[in-house]
Image: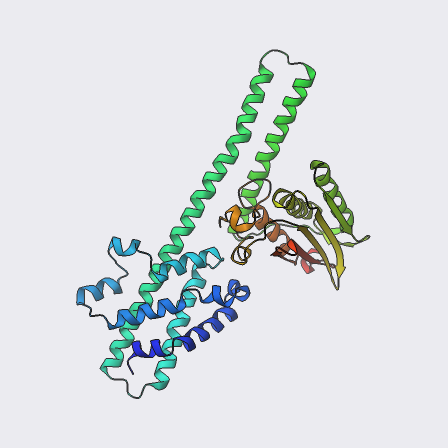
Length: 383
């Protein structure tokens, strides 16, 4: 049987084996639905099989083998280009994307050679054409993936410039007011308060950028755990957010005397981010709920709000940096007070640095809940 015919007849078996490989070896794939994980796998296989049957000149073969293509062809949307975009959206990196194609290649050739009686010149030709097709599909996926990453970075920089401009404008206006004569005491206090808020806003954005840079350099976010009352910290963070939003309803269910080892400043950062996120994006007519308790050997914290649920695809990437999710897609979630989209990413890094885990669930019935847990004992290297 020709390889192109084999691919068409055994498409489902190939996709099933590929899905099993992805779930076993690629982290983002482990929590994806079958529909999302398979997305365009069948279409990509069918496109490769169709290409294998087409006549090909030596020039066309050379162009394909070198990864070259006409600009119009490169811009056209194929199953492989769409696959690359979707994989970037759900948090795959380029190594994981390439691993998918390696798995497809290995699966197809292994299954086909099991049925192959003789390896003649035709079979070798089929293998060569199949490898060319896989390489071309991979190149298309990588190109669309990279374009999506570049677009996300450009959007990120545009948001940064926009968000920095606002507090800078406020600072400039405040300084102008203060420089003109001697304002009365109430006006002076209002102006100073605006200056303080603007400086604090810029400090948060710059700190987030520095934290993000540290993680990208492989250094991670530094935490210094020390013995403390985690429940007291939770109540303090909760009261601060409650005081900052007097028109919102809040509920607190915090167990007492949760003594463990943690970095107080870092954990306050996580709690403030999650609570602010819930206030900003939750239903204003429903309370924001903070629940903290002990479950087994872990201290567990959950922040819940009602509102538009986060779609399953967005749940895969909501903690990832430089992946822009529209408010409609994410149910409004995805950042902290600023719009850089780094708040949830940094919260995850802090929790992970404590040896913990963080996740989110969202539905119209139960609302959106961000939940993290950290060990109730110290990290070995922090004792």
